[in-house]
Image (cartoon, rainbow, N blue to C red; front, top):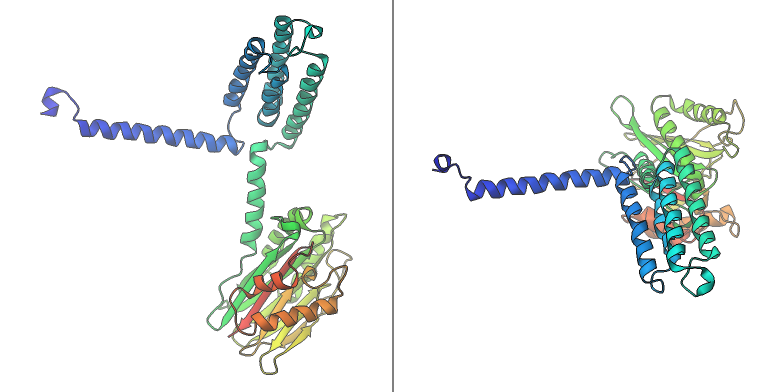
Length: 384
């Protein structure tokens, strides 16, 4: 009957309306995402801010005691954050014209309060100049401010993903914890790990401490973690640190050195090799004796000189044994020597690690180096 009368039933109409609303919401959401990622046009923000200028000028002329002439700095500040330099200049021209209109309507500044004074012009001009400099810097870098936070988030997530440990077979347990300096999101310490060998029964893990700390070392840590992740498993174990050393030397950084420890663990036998590049010693817990033993391999810092040699130290993890790799921020400070820090770490580890406590790596950092202003990283490997 609906077809004969030519009328659309209520249900299809409601469905079409909902579909149209959903389509509009999708377009609006995509536009907002593109804008805040820095991929959209600044036309919308430009029009909105440009319309704000005459509105403020009218409000100031009508109620100068409630709307001061200095209120024009609001769209000027917003424009410096949102707009490109070309659009910003047009907004500044509109703000300058609004100041002239306000000065004409309100009269000379000597006639009373609420007028456009030379100080008003200086304040608006100084804010505008600062916004223009910021906009030009963003334009030269090629990254709008809206994209800046997204890039930092991507940087942090890439370091986190690259530091993710592979799942180990039954009978093995691994934990890792990273704590950047000063509560920041970026760390100069990172871990890369993978399973290698014909049956993927060999764990190779590299714990690296880049010179510097926090955000200053974050970009270099990201670069090195990507490079080290590509080298790991592609080269024989004894060739990894020499290749990493050559890579750092080619970067020619002013502060380009790093310490690193490379673990090669056979998950069938428990035998392992440790290669070290100026790194603090590893610690192994012997389940039979209950004692911790230092495992200190020989090798220079990465990125210092060419042709460096790295001699491994060998060991074996029996059932119940634990191997602990960490960075110097966990055990060494200006007030505490390395040996004292290691003693404190092993003492706390007896409380968490020996009992097989889940989350032991995080709790150890909290117990030993909670307020240390340095990057801290801890990797635990336990044979059940």
